[in-house]
Length: 255
Image 1 (cartoon, rainbow, N blue to C red):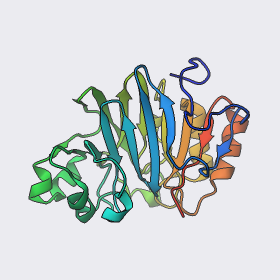
Image 2 (image 1 turned 135 degrees about the vertical axis):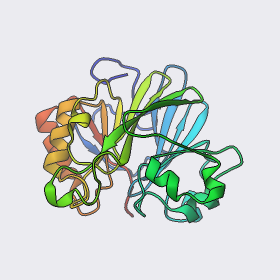
Image 3 (image 1 turned 30 degrees about the vertical axis):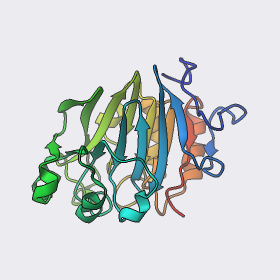
Image 4 (image 1 turned 90 degrees about the horizontal axis):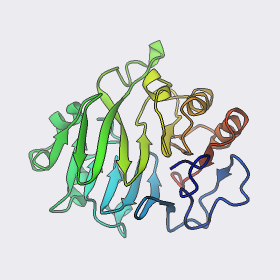
C-alpha cells in the first residue's frame, strides 16, 4: 500500500493532508501512536526509545529490540512477538526481555543472539539468519542483512551476523533496518510501505547515506530512528529534494 499508488495507507490519527509532499512530522499530538490502514485492520506504531518500538498489527503485538527496563513498556499491550536484530546492548537486553515476555510471547532473533539468550528465553526463541524466511501467525518475515561497509566501521556490524527484517503484514510491507550502512540489499528492496532507517555514526549511516538509500528504494513512509547525534530534519530535507513522494515521519525516540 503506497502513498503514491495506493490511497489506503495513511496516518489514522492526524492524517497527512496538508503536510506537503515530504515532511518531517513531529510526534507531538500523536501520543496514541501512528495508525496505517491495512487490508483488514490497522498497523499502529508506538516509538519508545532509540531503536525500540511497539507495533500493533492485526492479530498480534510486535516489540522491536526492546531495551531500557520494564517501566518503559508499562501501559503497552503484551508482546506476541519480539524481534531482536543483533547483540549490542542498545538492541538486546536479557533483563528487559525477562521482565516483559508473556506466557505466549515468541522471540525471533539472529543466530548470535540465540547463543546468548538465557535458557528460559531460549525456549521461546527461534533463530533466523540473513536471507532466511519464516512465518509467525499470519506474518511473513524475511531476515535482511545489516552490516557496515566503511572499513573502520566493519568491526561494529560485520557482514553476515546481524539482521534487519521485512515483515509482510495484512497486505503491507514493513522494513526494520537494524544497524546497517547503505548496503545493496537495502537499495534493492521493493514495495516497502513503512521503513525504519538508522543514522548514528560511527555505528550506522550518516544523513547523506540514509537519505540516498531511501531515495533509491522509495518506501511510502520513512521513519528515522536510532539517530542519536544526527539531524532528522536534514534527513527529511534531503529525502524531499531527491524523492518527494516519500513521507518522512519523526517518532519520539529521544525525550
